[in-house]
Length: 501
Image (tube, rainbow, N blue to C red; front, side):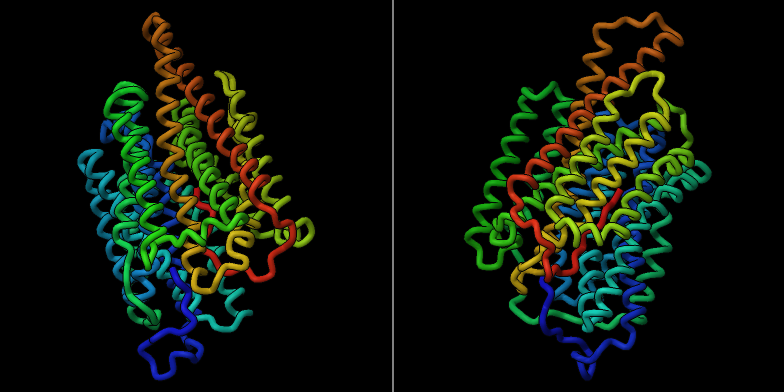
C-alpha cells in the first residue's frame, strides 16, 4: 500500500498532528491483533473442528490455507483500496466483514461452509490490516513518535500469537471450537465503533486505478496450486489427471501474472520491487520460512493432541515457548543487528531454525514434550525471530518512496503465501507417508491396531518435519546467495511484517 506524502483528510489542516493519534494507534493495533490472534486460535481448534465436522485428513489444511490464500492474495490490492477509498472507511468495512465471516464460521454445519468463512475472513483481513498500518503511518508525522508507535504496534502483534494460543485452548476445551470463531464478533464490532468515533479519515492523492487482472491471476494461480496439492493427497497421487491439470493451471496463471505486471501501467506488484537482489532474497526466504513454520505448527498441534493426548488448553500452553521465543528475540535482539549486520543474523537464525526442525525427526513412540517439542520450539523461535528482526530492514531499505507501502505489503504477502502453500504441501506428503507405512502392515485389531496407527502418524510427522526443515534450509541458502549487504541499513521503512503462529 503506498505511503503517501500528502493525505486529503476531512479536517481543516490535514498536515497538523492528529490530536487523537494515540487512540488511533490503539484502534489499529487491536484490529490487527485480532487478525494475528485468529491464526493461533484456529491451530488449537483444528483437531476438534475436524472431528465435529467429519473433515477428511486431505482437506483439513483448508481451515488454515483458505484464510492465508485470501489474505496473501489480496493484501496488495487491499492496501491500494485503503489508500484511495479512505483508510478509516476501509478499516471499518474490514472489521464488520470480519465479524460477519466469523459468525458464519461459528455456525458452519459442514467443512465447505467453514472453509468459505475462513476465506472470507482472509478477504476482510486483507482490507483491514493495511488500512490499520496506513492510519498509523499517516497519524504519526514525527519520526520519534512514529518509531515509538510502531514499537507498540509490533508488541500488540507479537503478543497476539501467545494470547491466541491460550484463548484458543480455553475456548476449545470449555466452550467448543465454534467459540474460536464467535470471539471475533464482539472484538471487531467494538473496534469498528471506536474507529467511527475516534479515528480521522485520510486518503492518498493520485490516480485511483486498481490492477484487477493481476489480482485475479495471482489469486487464481495460488488457489490452483494449493488445490493441486490437496488433490495429490486425495485424488490419486501426483500423476492423477486432475492434479496435473491444476498444477499446470497454476503455472500458467502465475506466469501470466508476471507478464501482466510487466506491461500494466498500474501493477499490483511492480516488478522493480521484487527484482532488487537483497529484497528478492528476503522475500523468497520469508515465503520459505512461512511455509516451513506454519507446516510445523499444523503437525505439532496433532502430535500434541493425538499422540501425547494433550487437551486443547494444554496444547495451547505447550506452544507458549514458541511465541515467547519470537517476542523475546525480536524485542531484545536489536543490538545484534547493529553489531553483526542483518545478513549474518538472518543466515545464522535461519540455520538455527533448520536445526530445530530437524530435531523433530527423532520422534518415536517414547518421544515427549520436554525431549522433542520444547527444544524445537526454542531453536525455531529464536532462529526465525532473528530473521524477523533483521529481514524487514534489508527488504525495505533504500526502496523508492512511491514503493514503500507496496514493498511492506509484499513482505507480509510473501509470508502469507508460504503459510498457504506449506501446510498444503506438507499435509499431502504426510498422508502419502502414513498410507505407505500402514498399507503393507496388517494390525491384529484392538489396541494393536490403534498402536499401529499412532506409529503411522509418527512416520508421517517425521516426513513432514524433514521437508519443513528442507524449506528452511533453502531459505538460508537463498539469503546466503542473494543478499549482498552486511551492513545495517539506515533508512528502513515501517513494515506490516509480524510473526504469526
